Image (cartoon, rainbow, N blue to C red; front, side, top):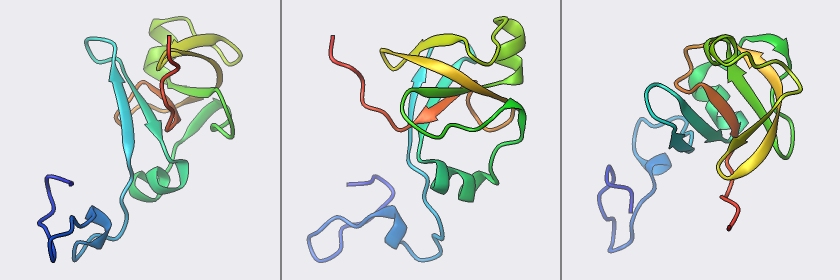
Length: 116
């Protein structure tokens, strides 16, 4: 059960059902220490909540093992579109560099970790 919700009729509610909640954006995250955080998102709901991404180079993620990085991460790590990065125990291809300010330095789809 979501810790923000109260049980209803013995069944847990979902946050989407709470009065006043218009959009919910589930986010899977991984911290790499410091300010480096990766988000696994549902693009439609995350964009609805956050207003979307401002793409500086390349494009937004569209499928599979694609990754966007923010401009600060790209600058600090000499990352460019087409580079590979390991996130959530998988190898991703950087398809876009976006303006910072959406909460994470690396952004991909909600993704299950590969079993090692």
